[in-house]
Image 1 (cartoon, rainbow, N blue to C red):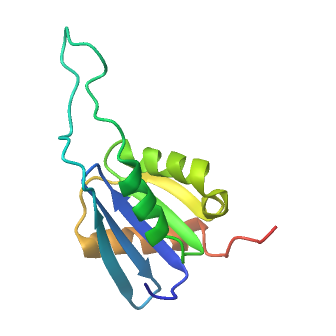
Image 2: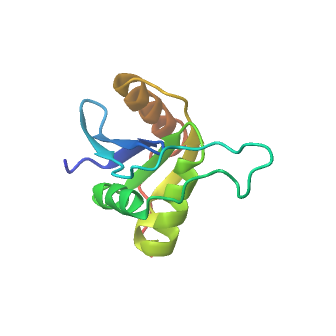
Length: 132
């Protein structure tokens, strides 16, 4: 990964698209879930909530891919963005301090994701986080 300051991740249950970026360039990579369990939905009269167990290996590999960022924006269309934030909270409190936002974002193209992240950081999050 690059030494750029900002990172954005768009995540769903199958993949995490991660971009380190500045105002001029972006470096991207994709982390894919290796889980063979399909994404399930709850059905009436069934036992349990219908969801597959979280793929903690996938979440950990995504967190590791974000480790060089000083400011992180987590995005995604559904619940996996929150699961990533919870995973980071439980397993890497130092990385948690660098998360500046968790936002809902449907299925953008890579350029649209980076543009949305640049706009997000320009709006309110320009200053780097302070060290304790």
